[in-house]
Length: 280
Image (tube, rainbow, N blue to C red; front, top):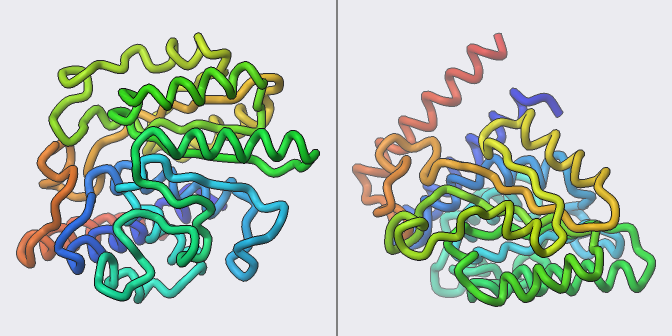
C-alpha cells in the first residue's frame, strides 16, 4: 500500500478516535492519536490477519499494552473491517462491547485483554514463546507507552524475551514524551530507552512515528533481525492531528466538548483535503 493511502486511512482512524471519545464523554485521545499511524501500518500493511476470521490460528498477534489508548485500536480495527465503524460511538456506553480497555472476550480482533500497565508486554512475550515452542511462524507485536516503561514488569518481560531470543517479537514504544502527570523525563525518566532495551539483548530502532517510510523500514528490519527481539522506539507527538491537543498533556485522558469536537474535526478534515490535493 502506498504512503498516501496509508496517510488517508490514518486520518480516518484519527477521526474515529475523536468521535468515539467525544461520544463517550471520557477516554484517552492524546496517546491514541499519537499512535494512529502505527496502528494503521500494523493493521493495513504489516500483520497477517483476516477480519473475516479473527481467530485464524496462524494470524499475527497484537497486544495493546497501554490499554487506555483503546480508542486508537478500536478505530483501526473498525476501519480494517473487524466491526462496523458506526459502533465507535458506543465507546464506554452501558451494554457496548467497546469497553474502556480492550476485552478479548467481546471484541473481534482483540488478542489480549489489557489495561493494567506493564502487563501487556508480558502476555505478548508469552505468545511469542508459545509460537516458538509450537513451531509456528506467526509474529507478535505489542505497543507500550513511554510512561509505562516506569513499570518494573516491563523489564522483567524484556529480560525474559531477550534471554529466550524471541525474534518473533516486536515491542513498539510510543514515545510521545508525555504521561498523565507531565513530561516523562520529569516524572521518572525512562531515557535512554534504546540503551535499556539493548541491555536486555534487544535490537533497537529509533523512528519518526509519523513517517510511513521510516515505519515501513523499521518493521522490515525487525523481520530481518534474527536471534533477538526488536524494540522500535517511535518518537511521536501526543494528540497528533488535532491542533489544540498536539503536545498538550492535558489531553492525555479527557474528552472534547461539542465545541472542541467541532474544531478537531475541522482540523482532520483539512488534512483529508490536503491529502486529496496531493493525490491529484
